[in-house]
Image 1 (cartoon, helix red, strand yellow):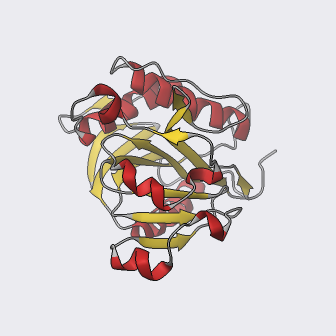
Image 2 (cartoon, helix red, strand yellow; image 1 turned 90 degrees about the horizontal axis):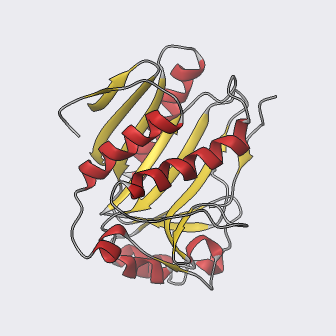
Length: 236
């Protein structure tokens, strides 16, 4: 794995394309190391092949196609232990998995969620995009369309799992196969759709890592390449 930014207490890694299950196993391994103090807070940045995931509160009817139809189209489907409903991951979407120790941070889960939103809003602002949080919903929105989803889990040790998904150059047609996040009356959008031009995923990954360091108050050095809650869950 290639380091995008390195520096105590943050290490951010750009991993390219990675299978969903492989990425989940990596998170679990790193969570053990983080809990033991063997590694600093770590931010994994990557994209997945076509994948639909169902959170712990997902309703099966929010997947609008049969498993056989999805398999024929090369779309994997997984049940996950994050909070929330159903979402889509795929090429052109930047996924971030922070392996982050919340135990000694003020605000704990609530503050962490708001900081994730602030970090994504700050990243989009560097591209001249005015995004915002929307009251009553988790994630980041532009003109009442979701551009970034957030879904997390915090284990009994205070270590975070899962994270966020930012639509950079995502084929938005794949969201028509689900009811995104279980929200039927709002749409989805992407950076490319709004900017009208391609945006390289590694460049966005670099800006996300930089914004993370600023929002979370963690040091990072640039490289050339781009009471603890138990099993807390948040709607995606």
